View (cartoon, one colour):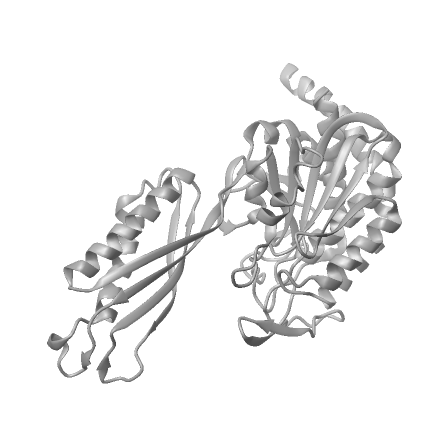
Length: 426
């Protein structure tokens, strides 16, 4: 009983502050929803968020923040200096959309088309970045209204190209960091959130430590010897060699990595080879992705994949060339920061609505910010109340849908984290 009383006493200041945000967040709720629907209706692809960035920058400038635009090509960084001394905290939202044709029947559905990888594509906010952007704009609005009570400095980072810059372009979190988003001023802690279409609205999910996987993209070029399809013994079939390599990759997962430590996923998504059914081709190209939740395991998988592909090819008289490109690191939530700030999220959503989750093999370039400062990335529910998570359309699909009626929970969470982090760091 005594432990429970101590825990409740410790929570009282945070609960009082959570109530402090109720009125200002309620006052801008309609605006947050309107912003989200505007961005949803007019989405833009990675590193092409020209109108999105300009819209955000214009609003934040009018709000009276110090605005840096364009930043990292099409992004925005805005700075709020509080009325009291304190730490520098960064809040991040991503602003780009995906090459997906929307199928959801809503009044503000996207009809936008663009070009991606040389193809005409539809464009859709099929991952919820429109909601992240509107939540952060709402947070900036509330904190500006409360500026005299804010301790320290808040850096609002509206980041382009989280889904990956096209081709060989720079972009995303690495470019934001390269251009000084975390250094001028020097950020002490960084927070981010992600909407989730399969989690009920009003709920917050989190995980301490490794929470989202690293993402590596790989290519394997197999070179054999061309011959007639009726005489395979005259050549070296790169397709057969590639099939053995794919099986070999899966034994890395099932037989070589310690899966009780962290999961590993190796997926081959593209295979290109051959021009005619009765010709054994000379070359084959395969491409895929690797997901790991442990940085040491990530490096080990890379080494094993290279060894597996080259030796299997060698055994058949072929050659294999492996190339691996790291797109994101493991998204790692600093355990001490999570422990310190968890009561803040519970004060906002209610203790029963803040749920510890399993790790996910999805990836986020928010991971790079965690290399610069302690980071905490959490998930906000977007599924309508009473919905079935198994039936809710997943992210990156044409039917992706979120209920935007409770985006204010995200605004309150960010505000709470800013105030409480400053208080706890005194």
